[in-house]
Length: 120
Image 1 (cartoon, rainbow, N blue to C red):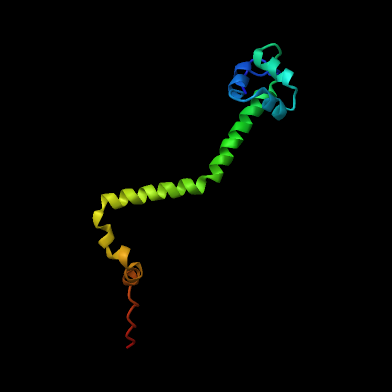
Image 2 (image 1 turned 135 degrees about the horizontal axis):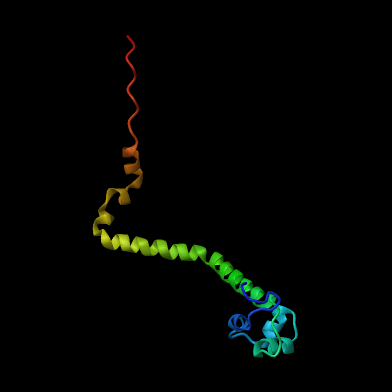
């Protein structure tokens, strides 16, 4: 956190991270009384440096946790979208022998065994 006075936090930053949240919830999260949080928000009291920093870190952590929990669904949507785009761009892909018979094509791709050496 970059703020001229290291003992106190930026009140605008506190208002940003506290937006759309009830004072009661903020007070419980910060383990302070509702009156103290209200005084910080209206500018009656100086904000300790750790308050906006803690709210910022908790918001970051929450976003990261949500991203991790929905990662598989996100990957599934992306792969389905790319499959649909590929199918649309190559309409003959359904007739491709690799699509219809992948095991046979894979067997054809295996090179034959080398011929035995002639020993003279």
